[in-house]
Image (tube, rainbow, N blue to C red):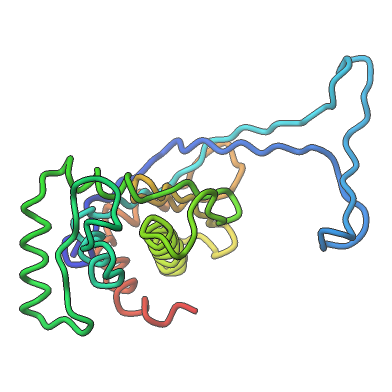
Length: 229
């Protein structure tokens, strides 16, 4: 199931660290030009700085790692410029595919990509994945460059996949949908789904889900993935 879905591995993290920072409070509405952040007032204990309250907790999480070869095949299908040596960064190009590739075309391209070493696969990805800030904005590239398209495709694919897995995990792990959150690592082709509770203990829902019901989670994710809005 992992291979068929393009995943390289799934692991449980029993002590995923979460830190919450509180800078102050707001007045007004939620819109940018309506809200005003009021920092906590300085006092004798804070000295000359602005007090920031920090809460640190550990929670349970599940990390999903994507197979770079599967991602490269997907990029070759969706971004024709990845086969153009004049457009890509570095010496590696992806196989050229027709606009509507057949199964034979995909098999040929998959074989060619699998002949790349692990280092070569990651080199292509890291050469074309630019940083993405915490708001999902690409910091350096634009859509008219190969790196801009690769960054956009990979980030949106990870974001969509995290929502699909998060939605299905809420039906299996015993956690309510509002008690689950996500964290993306685009340049590592990885995502984490974690529980955002602040209890001093973990109930083990993530461990049980992965150890006993991983096939159900992956099957539901595959069945309902195309329904994600």
